[in-house]
Figure 1: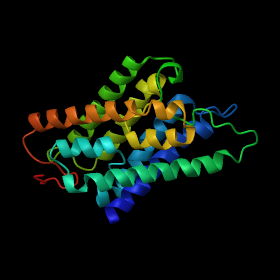
Figure 2: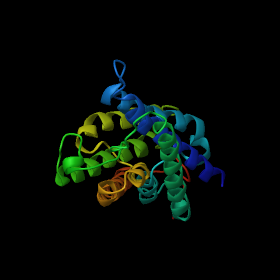
Figure 3: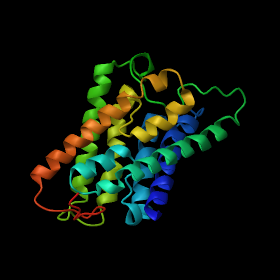
Figure 4: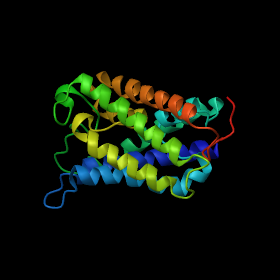
Length: 237
């Protein structure tokens, strides 16, 4: 239960910090942080949670990460569904808090509410194929970073920095394409509030990240020779 509470809080913070920066601060007159600031915000949420909650749950905060770690032999399959449910609930809670804050502004319109999309709902009008490739490849690289940084032979105590900066870089690359998901929980939470097109396109932001995560887990398991320091590092399930 402690692990699930940690995943709930961590994923809520990911949505509050990352999506919140996009919704509340990215276009603020004169002092807007822009997409670079949003990229940093997502990376900082993960980095801060790794060092505050990582020792409790492993700080996955992302269904694709949990699945990739399981495929890579670094996570117990018995915990997979509970983790994913906790991540989804945490993300939805974060989006709910953001909504309550956002409606405090006069003439508030929900717009895309930092949701992910392709075609006319892509920030720069990228099509479905570009979105699929981007989300799969970016998640693939994200999982390789996580699996490598938490490997038993990796330099200790710096995993959080590598993972946080990795997520920042991923956002710098892919925000123009899909508004960056690489996280089905983050995509689901925003789509539930936007409804309509966001829910219709949500399938891609589950399929592509999970596919990329599975491939990363398989490849890391093949090229590595031992366990890691992440959750359940000796798990045989």
